[in-house]
Image (cartoon, rainbow over all chains, first blue to last red; front, side, top):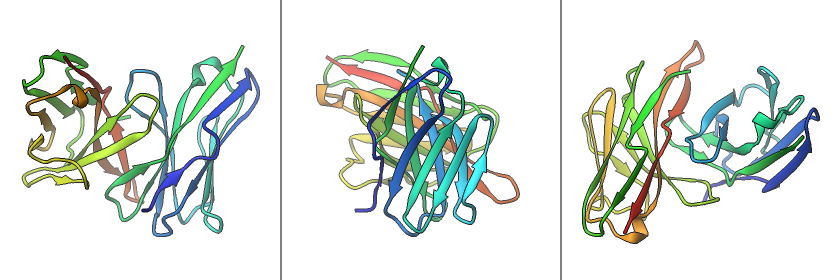
Length: 111
Length: 119
């Protein structure tokens, strides 16, 4: 079935470096994409979103890039901090209803 | 961001009993809420979509008689795990959808989750 997946299950970065988390999606009808951060024992926290009519969106220290040609989504975190350590999920939404989550990437930030 | 409150955060129950989990949107109205289940080190699996004033829509493979959902108001949805068994032990997370902005972005805000342990 349709799914959203991630290339790397685990990413380890040095504090201060930039992090890039990748995601592939397969549903060409998806028109809205979201990145969530989940810390241990907590619910997902909204980070940033992007609609399919855009290819880049920036937030505070985070940037989401969307490449519809290859159905690829990425989350860039600038100057990664220990507090960024968590599992990151990309999610897709088609038609404004169900949000389907990808497998998740665990980000480790080394001090 | 918007706040979604989920209660209880942790519950232990005996096999065969029923457990009710509440999900409230505290500062916005949500016509649609979602219930997810998450196993350790895995992603969130959508169980059902809860629609205010109507029946919930369950995903394939989710037993509707096992997981009863009620969305009686615009700020409250409940999930009842009936006759719980050890295999129902999991992390249950709810979310509420809020439409905002000129572009009609549908952002889902999540509760903190409920860890259910069935003995």
